[in-house]
Image (cartoon, rainbow over all chains, first blue to last red; front, side, top):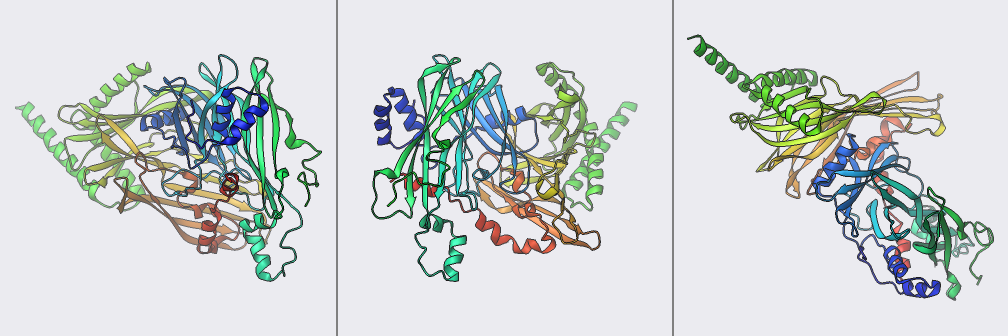
Length: 314
Length: 326
């Protein structure tokens, strides 16, 4: 069932024990958590699938990205997703149509579809898939996530993830790796989770550690231009989230729990302790139409969006 | 007696017409308008050749039965291939269904026909949906009278769809500025693979137009207009077995602040590389990324922007990931 090639993550089993979840959760966790842009096979579309999706779109604009994957639990179906540019000229301000389809694997007939939109913004800049973009660090803009998102005994949700490509200029905080979850019903793909960010990155501004260094013009210039320098001078918190299926159901679908394990890096003092990583929990609940955030520690005013550090001072 | 005369005249006509199409195919066009006119005239002539017209009728009847639609067909074009007079490329539109807001969805049919057996040897069916930006009209469909040799054994055949495609929605609403992007002509290149015509280059825009205002200008704002038109050339280099292509566009930029006008010639080009299935067409990066950097710095920015665009693409998002792995 594990469809992504990935590293086994010891964190997975620790958490499983911690939250007393089933084996399924462990599988899910490692699936989503250990997702890495370099460790997966490309989800290429066959030329027939590509032509079927183009004709289903009916638009003359080319696809800026397209992915296809046969469903592991329903091999008669292939899922496809593509981005079509619809406007906006500057990178970071462009608009795209994001269409997700279910095709017959044999005939490539499109049997279900959903059309959504995607506006670029800080942390979400689409870098199109072309042979010119050979940067191995640049993940494919789209990724079909067929982990076992089993919302109830009959319903397995299908995921499409949108990968951010750039660290936004000058931003102190951004989220990326957006997850969409769909439920396939007849001719429709119904979105139940939309644009849930799984990746989190934040600069905790503090006294720059290089504060006492003589601030020559060279130093100031490197500070303003060098993004890597930012992480040398400040403490950066970053982490990936993994979605868990909870046993409790509401309006027919299971509650979801997003665990974001973050870690500090950057200008840390030499003396370190265990408080430099944490797990942020976000609860999501189905309201009959879609999932909403029931509770999120990201918005906890006590230790978040607050000037005080949550880690122990040194 | 009469009969043989008719046959003779028909034969003579055939020879003249195909000689004409051959000449056109190998000639460099003079002006776009003239070339288009000649091409359309020639395509109409080619459809009248032998029984190509009835081949189209027959194919349209089959297609309409398959899809359960009316057999009416529009905008047929035909071209007898100059290197192989046995074959002809045919294309036409067929109304497929009504879609919302009274727009029509069309089947775009492209077939390669053996002129002696009148058999369809390879086929492609695409779907073109009309919408507020895309309108199919009588000059929509045309064949490029030229073969593109993608390698020694692979000739590609081109069609251009002229769709009135305009986007007058504001592209950027910052500071009340206005920008609109338009493109009308889309080229598709087909290669024969068995009984299929495969589009290896699909709907490459050949003309690009941006107009916009920049209200932050010193004299209370400027109006800018960029327009380029181009064509596709075959390069000697190859990727995945097919020659790289180059989209070469030329045009001018116009800029005015109400008092001073500036007109400068501009040109952009992009290389297109085959990825094993397609030559990817990423409209938002064509005719070149610099085209999209229109701003008030205006005329001279093109020569200065090269370095900037390269350094902007450095992704940093992976750095925290590698730290995660520790």
